[in-house]
Length: 398
Image (cartoon, rainbow, N blue to C red; front, side):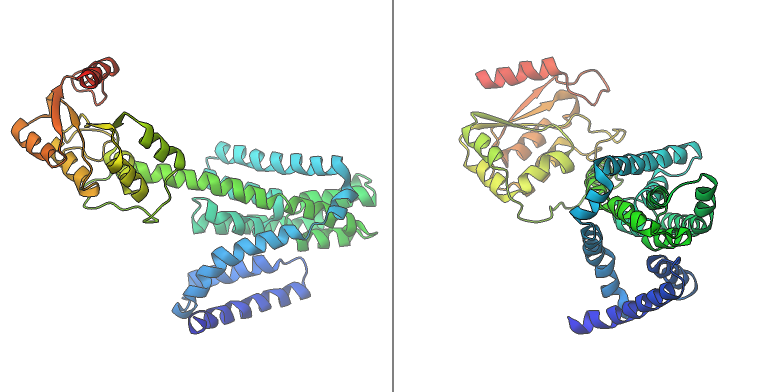
């Protein structure tokens, strides 16, 4: 393991050390911004060595998350008391207004929402650090990330010279200017530089306000990670449902997920269990890939009904099994639930091409086929609720 990661971490450490040395010479230049600049130069004019890839992957994910936590830990309760409750509320309002304001402007100027989010959080919280922290939780491209960091770094550098001029023009006192610099400038180093230009201990107030903004980074990352995970889930379902070609196999990660106790209890108490209809690979089959849940279904004394999907044509929209026959539906079901007995298979009469073949396929599940008119209307890919209820009721009373 050491041989795998040590060379890459060594190279990264050298570049980080150079970035900090530059920051010592010119405090207005953020070490993170310099590291981003190094990355830009390597990506466009050189090639990142293969031996550094494992360490780079760990650094961009695990170490970045640890860094975000440590950044927020710089703010003590004592520091927050210095700006008071009104100050904290003001910081939250400023950060929120900045993020959503820039998101609104991004729509106005027809920028991508992800770029607007990067710029908004960067301007609102802590500059390039915030951009790097939230980037994995967005769908932003590397180009958009570089653009956001470049814009934020440029504006932060200009603030060092512009804000003191405006502050003197407005006759701000030391505390007011320090609070303004802490609330307006993005990077911590640039905040210190801006307040130092003003002098008179303005940096003390600026740093407290600035670090209170940093406190908001962790909850923002958390919110965006939840948002991103939901997007990945919905995107995955959409891509499966609209993919061209044929799905050969299906698996779930992790391969042995825990079943919900409520689901197991419901299965154990049920007298009847219905499965389907729905997207075969992203809705119906996944329930069978949870081992404990499948075992519970096998062990249940409840009668089981499998409702097959409607459209067997190639023109179906939004169904990943379009063009597949009812027999193929049953074949895939049996493949992932061997040994699970299904008492009845309810199928619409319009999709039955060969009833004898369908009954043979159903026999692998120990199932009786019920063919009925359950389509909402000719050409529709939706079941008719009343028809479905009628035929289910007939089966339940049988």
